[in-house]
Length: 230
Ligand SMILES: [Zn+2]
Image (tube, protein in one colour):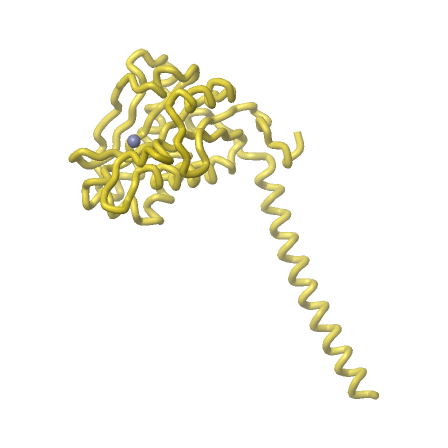
């Protein structure tokens, strides 16, 4: 496998990230803030962290587009995902975080959910965000996906304290890290063999740029010296 074609990774594990809502479906709305934008932002950040691991990612949407739940399930099922993670932001009077699996979820799904839930709560404790618990609900995307599926309801858009956190970039980044960390731990993902090479390549590119600068300075000095001699 070349690093360019990280189609399925070495391990072959594939995760489907599902940013809730999108397009004509804004999800929860508070003034100009829409759930669909927050879920997409969060999914992108979760994906960015997961890219450091040996895993291939599939998204149900990458932009502000309408994707019916049937299509989301089809993307996961046909894409051969090993795990489905749906990201949402809650509303309706409340505060905190909760996670969902289908009522007839398999033991493996429950185990994955528990690990991910625990990681997120460990992060949220630092912000005094309440843990509303591990719940079950037969939501379409949880019931119809053919792989372990978990849905996260991350804080309440209509709660001032929760909303302030959701709009705080460093909080959202930390939350994404906790979610991705939980997924990596649950699925026992190894580190991405290409990540190390990418880091080394970036270092080399920086070194080359420094050498180029140094070389240009030497040329300038030499040219000036020649001009002075002439
Ligand atoms: Zn939602």
